[in-house]
Amino acid sequence: MIQHITDDLYQIGEHVQNEYGYEAILTYVMLNDGNPILIDCGSHIHRDSVMAQLNELLGDAVPEYLFLTHSELPHAGNIAAVADKWPNIKVIVSNVMLPYIEVLPVLPLEQITQVVPGTKIEFPTRTIEFVDALLKDQPGSHWIHDPRTGALFTGDGFGYFNAEADIQTLPATAAEAVTETAFAQYHKVAFRFLQWISPERLAVDLRKMFTKRNVQVIAPIHGNAIRGDIDGHLDRMIAALGTVKASYQ
Ligand SMILES: [Fe+2]
Ligand SMILES: [Fe+2]
Image (cartoon, rainbow, N blue to C red; front, side, top):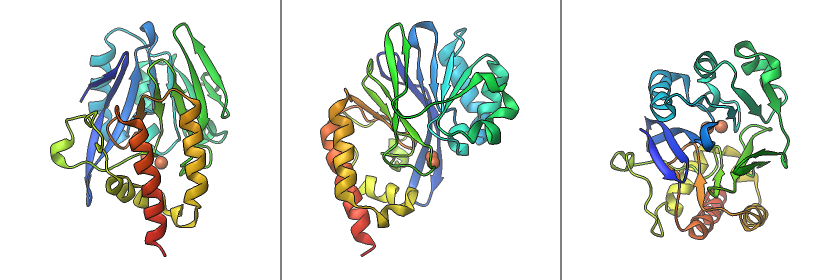
């Protein structure tokens, strides 16, 4: 389902049922003045649906870039279909192994670039920044910040499971749209290592990341984009990390 988030930012994707409800597997699209940018490209199991949604949203526009937060299949699994449809697309990855292991067979190496945290790519109306993923499930995962929309694309971070009734709706802009309990439930499953972290230190880094940047939208791949009460969501996320850690003790 195509959903408009803000400005030229859209989300598309599907949901997969699991024991907790429904898990989103999303792709974000910035139309970017006729040179669209994709953030992740969905799972191969949703190939037909994802490509249909991309075609509907993009029309004749040809995406210039695909930015991958990391290389797991729900994020990169649809790359063969994307490369087949748009063979000149440039892929930005976060891990040096990825082009050799998963991306190279479908695209020439010169179309694939590895970036490190702090790298910026300039466009006429935005400068995209790649930042270290503070919650990562692959060593090279990165997050991506777009100052124009204020979106922080957080990969697996800030995900949450949805009830069936909520799948078609974005979280309201009101406070408490995503609860601490929902963040805790998802992150305990998605990041098994949270039992070994220091929630206090992670909280400091998370607050620093948000303070330094204009964040108006938190855009996880596994949960609808969060558009309101950013400070409250950050607080509830940080509380959830503490809750998860405490659950092991
Ligand atoms: Fe992941
Ligand atoms: Fe994921």
